[in-house]
Length: 114
Length: 110
Image (cartoon, rainbow over all chains, first blue to last red; front, side):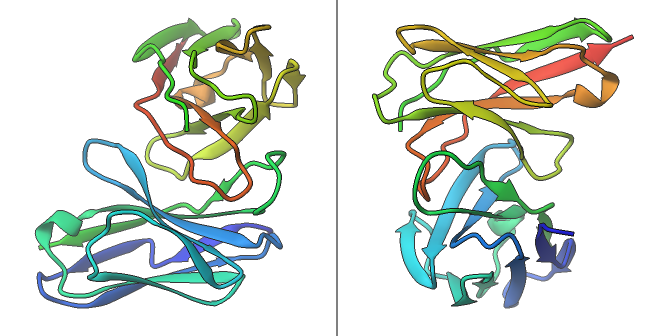
């Protein structure tokens, strides 16, 4: 199936740990994103990569580091996890040029920091 | 990206048309109107988008006013599975970020 897939779907971890979330898309898109949805359900962009190049970097703590080994993958590594990092993280992808395409989102990774 | 204003909630009877309004009075000439929905914490799902003309696809219709300051998403025959938060977003697209507001919680009832 063509899709944006994220792993893991659920992640429970203790404060201070380091964790990674992986994202892969097989849609042939050249741009990938990470969005965060907090407990109040607000969806906010964190990062965007185009062909392995960082193009959007919102005000995110530097404990969060995205890595894009190729244009089909965008991983999110989080160091020294804090309680406030608990949220649902969504990966998405799209084409870079033109407004004629929608964005495709993954099903999310629910991160719980205890 | 321009901001949008949507009603916080709407109800619709199953089988009836659901008309979801959106105001985007500060939209720029190169910005598209996108609609997404999120069903119970799943990933947002693209529904439809348009620039100036009305658009229709298998999911919905999008009506954009001539001055482009507002639009309406129409689900012609709403079902219980259409219960979701619907987001109206304006963006130039093309890799730029989508700025999500609070959306409209649509509840479809029997």
